[in-house]
Length: 229
Image (cartoon, rainbow, N blue to C red; front, side, top):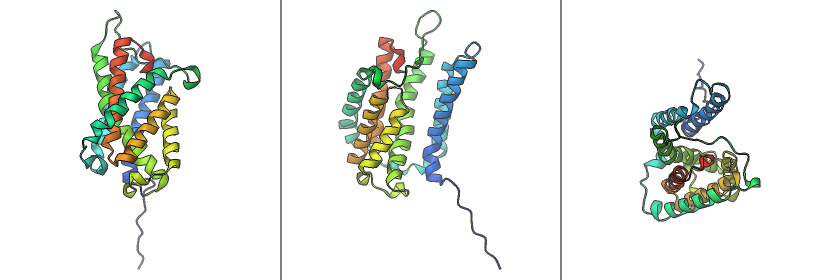
């Protein structure tokens, strides 16, 4: 009598749950870039942003039972630590844009209508997505998963406080090159990593990340510095 050995999936469900939303987000970035280059005359790629946000939300909801780190309630450190650090990252972000700190300026996200007025149907989804969805998706991937996984593949049982310097630097460097302003991105990655290691609660860097993105969104709309979007 032979026994069948169950095949192990190439990617475990805990890993997939944290990689999939990020992969959906990055996939839409490629689609947006292609639409901008090849279909800009017939398709306004700006409207892909709310579609992308909804796609990420649906992916997060599908895997919601896997996110045990988000089941831990945020405590006051999320506000006493997260918000000030998030505001500091915002200030650094809009000032650290010198030549060598920039991987090349992209087109940015200009939400103005043809008559020059603000198209709030584009602005509001952009700010909401950046402040409410992106921080959750990215902190699950960069800090909760990748940073801990670099140290220990059983990342869910690896306490944030045990994460070593190598994992912090590697994950923060990769987070940096995801952004055009790579140096500001590096400092942001280090700041969010420190918050997670020090606090042990993923909501702390998530709130900080959300604070940065919300402040940046308000600043961009007020100043017209679309390149930061």
